[in-house]
Length: 227
Ligand SMILES: *Cc1c(COP(=O)(O)O)cnc(C)c1O
Image 1 (cartoon, rainbow, N blue to C red):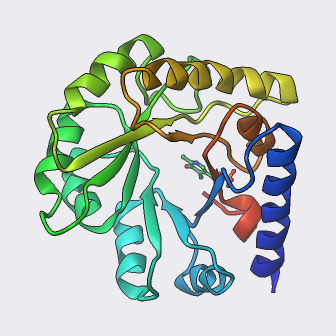
Image 2: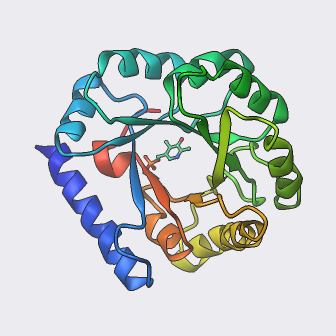
């Protein structure tokens, strides 16, 4: 029962970090990143009461989403969003964490079915030390949020980033602190922003110290992967 043990450990670590850094109990949501994982592995996690899953590759994700019929599973799209994938993302996911272009936002809004709740959106931010080229720079985010307000089928929830992994805890915290500050500043005019999607297996504690409300954990839940 490796996945069960892993989940127990990671939940304990999250609780410990919440305590250590003065965060409210249960204020950090665990998104189990299930990219490249098989359906039966995801079901094992569901059987351990894991409900939030993150996927990066649209095609692969949708096969899993269709096959997994357990109730109350919440799917987060966390990979780069290509224009030709917006329809599928809008139909199958509850969240998209990596929105950084108006064109993509507009398509997600147009494609989101009327009978579904609005798609929850995080804006991907690039704090200059990111693992990818994706993301808006910090000074672009406020205008972007104001533009997103026109889209009625989207619900802007907060910010996401994926910094390069630093070796020291303090450096890891530094990568996240500008985002925490930005979310706080934006909150004055946008009280609906309640999400900071930061932290992976290697920098989860630093992310929780800097206000993460969801951490996206793959390796520590499912074990190492090839891609
Ligand atoms: C793969 C991935 C993760 C999980 O990374 P781990 O190091 O396996 O925890 C988190 N966020 C994004 C955007 C990813 O692509």
